[in-house]
View 1 (cartoon, rainbow, N blue to C red):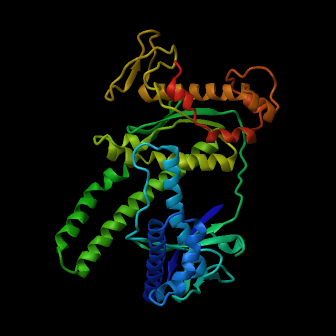
View 2 (cartoon, one colour):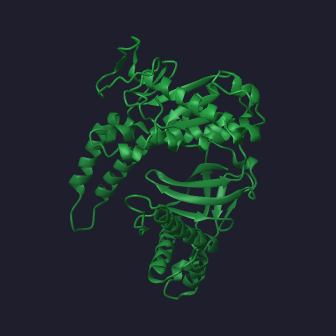
View 3 (tube, rainbow, N blue to C red):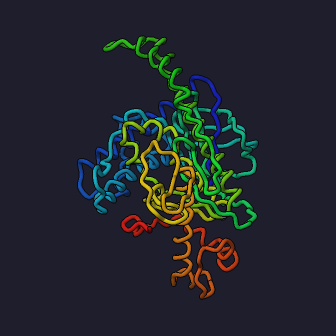
Length: 424
């Protein structure tokens, strides 16, 4: 699947029509959620039927204007939240279970196969539902002429701080050629450097939020000064609010672009990548480091890393971070360190390395151990046809004897047994 995003260019009246469609989609979702709360044993099919009831109800004439499949899409959104809540309860997830909440400020409306139509040159899109949004131009760096309307299964309209965008979901199996040379690396994600690999190479941490803090504070001050409590806000207030939102949007786009480019460069240059499976949701509870951790965008980087690895057929392994900083990468001795200690000095073997470099080597070693266990397992031999010789983590063994397509499933593995009993 591909998601191609294009900016929508039209008149102000058309944008107002899109806002009405977005509010109607929010109304459909919240009504479905209320119906689930007031009734027992509600199923997804019941929510789908409720959409038709709302369209025929004379008290809600705006619901009929929204395309029927768009109403069903928003009912599916409500059911997705309900189903996730049920799943968390069934699995006994600790803490909050994610009880579905009502939406107050929705920013998107989703169409399926109807309610929209592309022009012949794929540079314009027409919204044909009851809101009569009309024809709008599509501004995108991607040429949509290569895809037919049958390949586009969904269109989502999103309102952002700098305008309206259309996301087109294209049914396309993306595959890229990759020349395998047996290059392997382990990466240690950090705050001083964005990541350090097992060869000692580093990628700098740009700290986009930190660099924009001065301007963000100024814009936030302007918003606060123009806000009048309990009264209708002025046009100057809304202008200042939009300027603040645009700056936050710029920071988020910088993070996304950086994460995507770094992940693609790493996948193109390596054949096996091992990274630490950090619990970022727990790490941001540290109020001293929460802002820096969020600004580093580790989660976005790992998500793009797994996506590009699947596209290029590269193996990606996630290992738990337990003792990767404490263990010596040469002799395995434990060397306690504080966060301010940036150099690893082993008293047993005399190894002196950068703290992150030492951790990256340990991460790669954990990846080799997991790979060897997988190759020596019954499942690995039966599916890949590997020889009976044990894999000891040699550089080219897995490339010669094992199918890369079979091992690409390793990016789904999580070694929970290592979390309970970390290797020495």
